[in-house]
Length: 342
Image 1 (cartoon, rainbow, N blue to C red):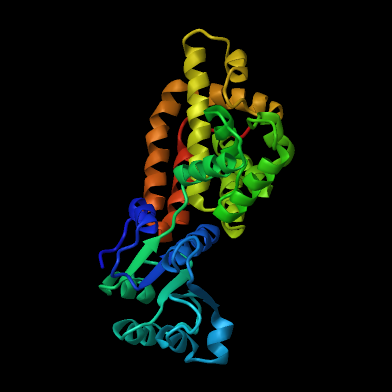
Image 2: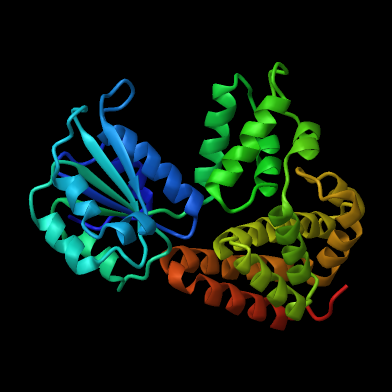
C-alpha cells in the first residue's frame, strides 16, 4: 500500500481502505499515536454500537507467550463479529515473524503503535510495502491541536474566539493526550459560562512545558545562544517535540516584527507591545520591547523565512528535528540582530 503522508492520515482514519488489515501508527507524540490507535480500533471494531472485540498486547504479553499475537490474529472470535488487536511495538515484536503473519490469512485486524521511526526502519518499511497494510505518521501541529480544542469545547457546550484559542495553544504542551486532558479540565472549569476566557485559561491551564518553551523563545530572541541550546536540550529530554518549540519561536518572532514595524511607522514601541493580542506576560514586556529594539523590523523580517524553513524541515525529516532546531538557534545567534543577551 502507498505510504501515507501526515496530511492524509486523518482521511484514512475517517474511512480506512477496505482491504487494509494491518496499520502501523508511529511518531514522536505518544499521546497522538495512542489517541489515533484507539479511534481506529473503534472503527475497525464496528464503530459506535459495534460488537467487535479489542485486544491489547505489549512486550510483556509477547515475552510470556511468543505466539500470542499470531494466535489472537488467526483465531476466529467466539463472542464478537470482529476482532482488533492493538500491540505496542517493542523488542519482542519480531519484524520477520510479523511479515510472515501479514502475508497469511488473519481473522482480526492488527494495529501497531510505535514511536518515531526512521525511514529505513524495518517495521515502517514492512507496513509501507504490504498491499493490505498502511503506515500512518502521527505528527501533531497547530492545526491538530486547534481542531482538538474546538471539538472538546464544542462537546462541552462552550465557544472560544480565535484570539483566546491562540492564547490557549501557547499554554499547551507537545503531547496530544496531555493537551486534551488540559482542555477537558478547562471545559469543566468554564462549564455553564458559554465561552472560554483568558482569565479561565490562566487560572486552570498550564504545565512546565509551556513555561520552558516561553523561556526558550526569549533566550533565542535575547541572543543567549548557549542558554537557548541548553533549554532546547531540556525540552527534548522532557518530550517536547522540537517542531513545537520552533512553532512557538515563529509566533514569538512574528510578534516581535509586528511591534518593531509599528514602531518604525511612528507608533510608541511600549504602547505597541501592550496592544498585542495575545499580549506578552507583564513580567516579559520589558524584555520583549528590548528584543524588538535590538533586532529591528528589517532584521526580524529577514529571519522569519529561516525559522519557517527549519519548521518545514523538522516535519519532513522528524528523525533530524533536533539537529535542524539546533542549527537554527546557532544561525539566529550569529545574526547581527542578536548580539548580546539582555
